[in-house]
Length: 343
Ligand code: FES
Image (cartoon, rainbow, N blue to C red):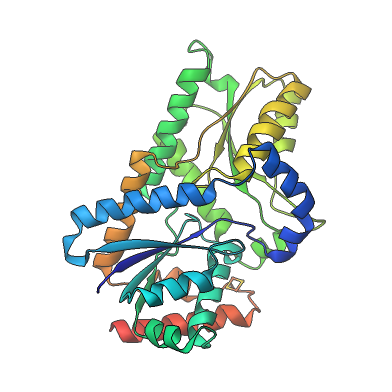
């Protein structure tokens, strides 16, 4: 049985279990307010299914393809997914994190965990044996994927056409590209996330021919540390104070809807803040979800990766300049071992 497998790691409580614990009571209330739970698993399944359909249809030489999902801090967890991969007798796995922009606290942390599982025999003996025979590789960043950019551009244009007065002066509409923030100490360590997010923003704005004023802003800060800013809500307040009444908020680092879009952007800013500041519009652009261009982009990324024979990007092979985490170096050793096997 030869499965080409696609393994998704989706954005979820990215800075660790301690944040999840700190937020637990308030997060439970927020989930109630968005209908009782996160839709992230369902969206990820739909994306995986559409992607594997395209691969099975177009990439016959590597078929059949099957997707598996693992989350970092919620079910299905990585160890259970690895057991499934082992049980199915998979021979080749492409690890495809659903974070288009790489951060050591999201993709990096998930890869560190994967490398630890595969290098330290933590699973059952049979699973360890089977997984050692698997050929692994990683798509570690895809911030400029053309399908990702196309889908975001199309979603922005549709939302603006449907919800804004067509006679409105474009210079009076502020586009805010909102990404999950991260602590400044992570940025200062040399993390590439902020520059990769900015690259996606600039690619989208280039396609929109820089028709609107725009800013890259940061959301979802927790705890007392300093995080990457300007924050989304404070930016809206500041521009409202300068007389701007119409905002279009674009989630730029999320590929499917979940609590940060459905609660923070839609309820806390789109409803509560809009009313408080007496704004005309805060329009929230949907995430790519199953937009056809986005699914094409996923297919393009996997196809290109399979034909390249690369284990990962050159960028992933080097740690952050100020990294002191031994797990990051161990993950690179694991990658090095994979590269030797691929030669
Ligand atoms: Fe970036 Fe370790 S923190 S490689």
